[in-house]
Structures are given as C-alpha cells and as structure tokens.
Image 1: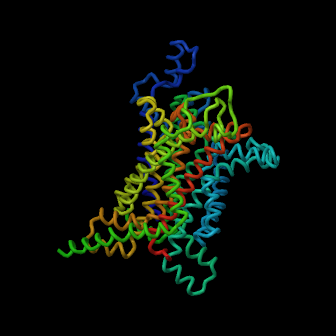
Image 2: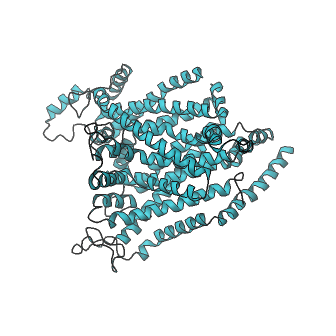
Image 3: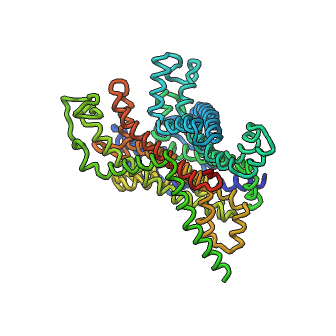
Amino acid sequence: MWRFIGVRLLQAIPVILVVITVTFFLVRIAPGGPFDSEKAVTREVKAALEAQYKLNLPLFQQYTSYLNDVAHGNLGPSFKYPGRSVNELIAAGFPVTAELGLYAMLVALGIGGLAGIIAALKPNTAQDYIPMSAAMIGICMPSFLLGPLLVLVFGIHLDWLPVSGWGDIPGDKILPAITLGAAYAAYIARLGRAGMLEVLSQDYIRTARAKGLPEWQVVVKHSLRGGMIPVVAFLGPAFAGLLAGSFVVETIFQIPGLGRFFVQAAFNRDYTMILGTTVFVSVLIVLFNLLSDILAAWMNPRLRAQFSQH
Amino acid sequence: MNTQTISDISQAEQGTSLWKDAWLRLRKNHLAVFGLVLLVTFIIIALLTPWIAPYSYQAQDLELGASPPSAAHWLGTDIFGRDLMTQIMYGGRISLAVGFVATTVALLIGVTWGAIAGYVGGRTDAVMMRMVDILYALPFMIFIVLLTVVFGRNMLLLFLAIGAVEWLTMARIMRGQVQSLRQMEFVEAAISLGLSPATLIRRHLVPNALGPIIVYTTLTIPSVMLLEAFLSFLGLGVQPPQTSWGLLISYGAETMEEYPWLLIFPGVALTLTLFSLNFLGDGLRDALDVRGAKD
C-alpha cells in the first residue's frame, strides 16, 4: 500500500514534466505574444519588457530556466498583473476556490448520492423516474443558466439570499455552491444508480436479503461500497476540476477565485500564468486521481491486486 | 483443435443471443421505444432542415423584432425578427452532430484505452493511465485557441477536439470495471479456454461493463453539447448567423425576463433530446443486463 503510493508519487514527476514541456511549447507556437495588445508600447519598451521577462533568450534556454524555477517552487512573475508573481495570485485565489469547491462537492455528494441510491432501490418506478428526471434537468441546465435563474428566484423575487460576493454577507456562499454542485450531483446520481443496480443484482446481495437483513443494512453495509465504484472513478478528476475553479460560476457571482485566470491567461497569452495554473492543475489531478484509485481499492477488494503488481 | 471448436461455439452463441435478446427486451420497454422514436424523429428533422424549415435562417424582420409565438412564427422570433423554429432546427443540426460525433470518438477511445489498461495491468497500465493524467492537466483552452488559429474555424476539428478531452473519464471508469471483472471466475475460465486478450475484452469484458459505459455515454452527449456552447460563447466554435442549441440557450439566458420563449424553446429541444437518450440508455442497459432481467 505505502509502496503503491510511493510509486504513484514518483510517477507524478514525469507526468508534470511532460505537462510543462507540452504546454510550454504549445503556448509559444500559438500566435500573438503577451505584450501585443498594449497599443502604446514602442519597440524599445517592448524589447525592455521582453528582456525583463527573459523572452529575448533562446527558447530552449527559457525552457530550462523555467524548469529550474519550477523545481524551486517559483512559478515566475505574471505578465498581465505587473509586480505580482503567479505564486501570489494562485495563493490568493485558491482558498476561495477550494472552499467553494468543497461546498459544491458536499452538495453534489449529498443530493446526487442519495438520489442515485433511492432510484436504484426501485428501478423503473416513480421512485426511480422522479430523481432521475431531476438529474437529467440538472445535466441539461448549464451553470450560465442555472446561476442567473437561482439569483432571479432566491435572490431577487424571494429575496432570501444575497446574489453575489464571497464571505461579505452571511449566506452568500449558498447559491454559488448549489450552482456549481448541481451538475456534479446529476452525474453522481446517474453513475451511482448504474453502479448500485449492478451490485444489487449480485448473488451475495440476494443472500444478504435472504438471511433477513434489514434493507438499510443491505444497502449501507453490502451494496454501497461496490456500487459507488463508477462514482469514485469520476470523483478524482471532478474534485481536481472543482479545485481549479469555475470561470462561469465565479463570474456570475463575482467570486475572486482561480477560475477566471485560466480563461484570461489563455486569451492574454500570459505565458507564466498559463504555465503556472497548468502546473497547479497537474498536481491536483495527480493527487486526486491517486486518492480516487486508493478509495476504489478500499471499496472493492478485487481492485487491490493492483497494489502488488508494482 | 480443441480451442478452435470452443471459440466457434462461443462465437455462435454470443452472436445470436446477446443483441437479439436485448432488442426483444428493449421493444417491451415503452419509455425506451419512445426515446428511440423521438431521437430518430429529431435526426430526420435535422437532416431535412434545409428543405422543411419554415423560413430561411438568415431572414430577418427588424420591424417585427422579438415576438412571442404566433400563427406565422410558431415558436416566436428573436430580437432581429428571425424565426425561432427555423433557428432551433438549424441549431439542432450542429448540436446533434457535435453530440454524436464527439461522443462516438470519446466512447471508442475511452473504452478501448480503459479496457486495455485495466486488463493488461502492471507497467502498461501505469503508463497508459499517467498519459490520461497528462491529458487531464493540459490546458484545453490553449489547445482550442491554437487549433482555431492554425486551421481556421473548422467544425470537424472542433468535434474531434471535444471528443479528445471527453474520453478521459470514460477510460477511468472502464478501467475500474475491467479490473474488478478480470478477477471474476468467468474471465479466468475464458482465459483458461485459450481466448486471446482482444477477443476476451470484446466478447466478455466490454459487454459486462456496458451498464456504466452506457450511462456515462448518455452523460457525455449533453456535456459535449454544452462545451460546444461555451466555446462558441468565447468565439471559438460556431459563429453567428450559424447557431446551435447551446448558443441559443446562452443568448436566451441573457434576455430570459423580457423574452422567456427565446430560452424556453431551445431549452425544451435540448432537454427532450437528453431525456430520450436517457430513457433509451437506461432501456439498453436493462435489456443488456442478463442478470437483472426479470421478464
């Protein structure tokens, strides 16, 4: 087990190296540079700017120098936020995004998990169709629609909850968490139902029922661990994605998180910001996919064989 | 000689029973049949749109402006006086195409990748799944910006690009299923009968993991359609006057208080499609699940 974790963490080094390399050269191939949009920049100023950010060096030298910086935990200065480093910007946005992501995941797991289990217990009845139809609507409803709709109903017409901000007024975290969590809840509900149905038709469940166990014990003790495996495979990347922030939700509710950086940086050709956020995401992906694989192995003894294979 | 006979027998049985049986059971599931009929209708409408659309999709009527549903315009018009029904029909062509093409790409790559990684295991599995991690982490936005800049606004490329990111979770789910299945007795039996890994994966592992795969496929189609809307919204996908359901919904969302029909009708079209897909998907899952079959 510990060996398995150690091996996976070692594998993270080549993963992150490849991600940095591909991204580094990908953004340089893309036409347009970070200082193209500033109109009044004379050639001399542009040259000075490029020298300051080492853009005048040969490409390969920029690459090795960047790798060296990253190895020391330094993601470099941002091009578009002068005077701020990428480390600072991520450090400022991450706590907000992480908190929002955590609430959204709680909403998603609570509502989605419950709906999936309830539906799987009585397939093809009203108890199945109602939560699954709600889940379908949740999937069809993009966050750029759900967000404004929730704001309109609960923020403006009913005036129950604040419509924007983060941590300023009590309750202003509720609507963004629901908006962000809804789609994930729908996924979890659908995947959970499928996984549970698979498990509930197994012989050992029939045995458990035959020996007279109460239904909640059959579900909680015997089916849940096996039935949630598809959900767990989905949770790794989903959680990593939540912690990287959502551009749409953060824009709607004016939340100072990480999500906007991804889109802004791509459009501004803010090289260091693109790379910095990418490195950050790759660390999240590696960690959460590892956690999700460990969780899956804990839930299904048949998967534990992979631990001894390495 | 023995192995030859055995695989002959298993092929003959598989080929006639699983899918034919499933089709018989699917036909009894009214909701699934309803979903199938509705989907086929939508696809036929999408194919025939240029001939059956009530108006030209560029025809504007600026004096009329946004009008609610009427006899002349069944679903109303947008702020430029364009017929909404025509726009939904043309938008459906793009949305359905994106949905099906990108999802098929994602399905094929994801299932194959996950099945091989899960079945072979060991070092191959580690390398394959770390490649999945890498693709998760690469900045998708940059990739799309680059593609649009280099190749122009090419729809087929957009479909492929979307398909290329959507297969990752499919691969993870498939791998988990296969890892769990390959420890089961029937797989051991199949291996000891001398089945080649490719046949084993195709005939035994994939059919047994179909439940979660079908469900994830029905989840991928809407997410692909909405991703297309997001990219179009950022100016990287479909551009006006061309349109898609996702774009119609995102414009409709901006004016949902003044002109609610501009949001409601495209939303209904998308929701109906997804509901039918969902019923069909669940029906297929039940029809293919031999263990759970009760009728």
